[in-house]
Amino acid sequence: MSSRDLDLVAVCSFLNERSLDEIIQYGAIGATSDRWAHLLDDNDEMTGESSVTGTTSDEASDSEDPPPAMVIRQYPKKPKKPKTELQRKLQQVYDKKSRINKRARHNALGGSFVLVLQEFVGLMQFRIVTTERDIGLLCLAKKNGVFMPTGENTQLQLELNQGALECIKVTVEDWKKRKNGETGKCFLKHISTEIQHLLDNLLMLGEQLRVAMEELRWRLEGNSTGVWV
Image 1 (cartoon, rainbow, N blue to C red):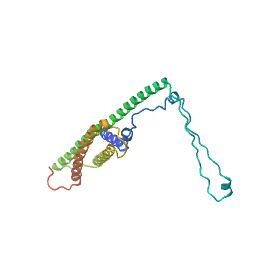
Image 2: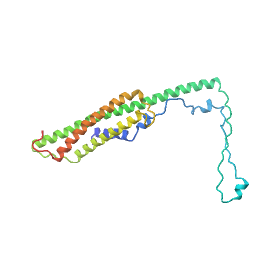
Image 3: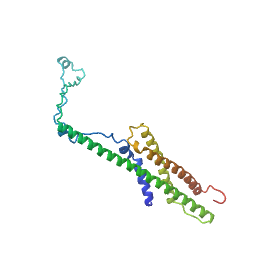
Image 4: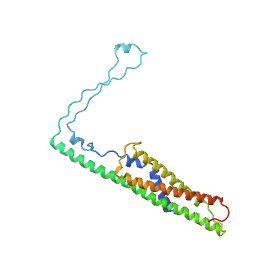
């Protein structure tokens, strides 16, 4: 396979393996204080303890009775001590930093998805050109009465084309569900227009490739009559 063929395989693998999950369903941007919990919440107490009651004398006397149910006693939550002014300021600083970092990472992931789709568009254009080139070579060979071997390479090209078409279909359907909220909240609304435009281009290119594939198969099978044009 050529380097462009390998690129196509890599792009389709990325999309088919649902690498989109980490990008589109990335959690909402907000504060997370786990990292500094020991500093910001050092005055917090345990929320409660649990204990298990044993069996009563009546229950113990009947060996055929089922085991007693586990009873968990929840103790009232102890009030938290108010945070100091320093703790509140540190919490605000951390929250702001956390939001900035998450937003930057989220934007980078979203941008990477757009880049993959842009690359996919370019690879689909290459697929169309390659398929039409093979059709042209077959036509020329037929007109000149020259036998042109069409074996593993042509079959490989058809398989690559079919894999690309299936990847487009799955990716478009998956994006539609995510954008409509059918599979969870979508966090790429800020670039959804750009993504939709790229997907529309892929659908258009996919239809062009499908037509070219049908003609290539037809010419390979030799179902035509007369002179090819």
